[in-house]
Image 1: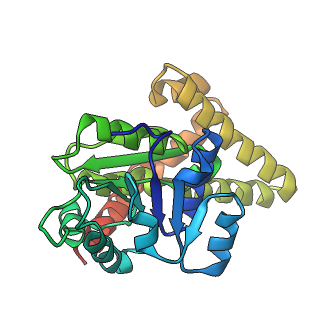
Image 2: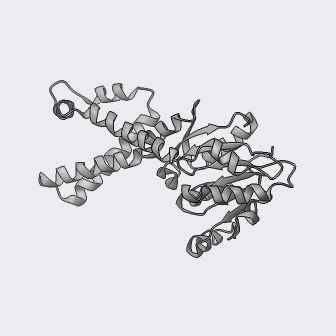
Length: 280
């Protein structure tokens, strides 16, 4: 298996997540000539072409000789795309590794759809990235079919590492639904928290622009502490909380209003919805 630097990479779909990964690859000195993108929409395709990567409207043209094929299309078109690619790979001696970021589509479906005319199925990895990949601060969950080799996993790690600071391989496919409820949907939870913090401070008289700057930087700083500190989140919380102080008063309010239950129910709701979409 070639290294990421020498691999031919095909992106089927050139939307935001694909563009983010491509940007990360280029920042890590992956050759533009090794990256192929199939994208039907002129605006997205032209934007990617401007970066110097190879672009086309043909999925088969992009994926024909690729070592790694990233399926970055909407779930409802994944079957058509995979069947088209699988048919085109029938004459290949070695099939590419397929990486799917199409939400909810199971490994079994992907392998069956991408099966070649002579009955071979590609090795498949499902990935759940998140939107901070757009600023190279992503978190991704991954699950591989049993035939994926350690070398192939390392290639996927290198791919995701271009935009993700954390890539976690889960042991069971259904745990990707939990990853979806945690980190896939998670950025929106923090955006909502900051949104309400700003609104609360503004209602108490602080100018909105000042409240926004203070709240967003607080979120960034707290996140940086979580990543860089050796302390558990619970200990970091305790470090900020003086007995009967201001933080204690706020946290007591959270507790009294059932903050833990709210978070539990929110993450479970997102997890359940991910599982439901996968079944559909």
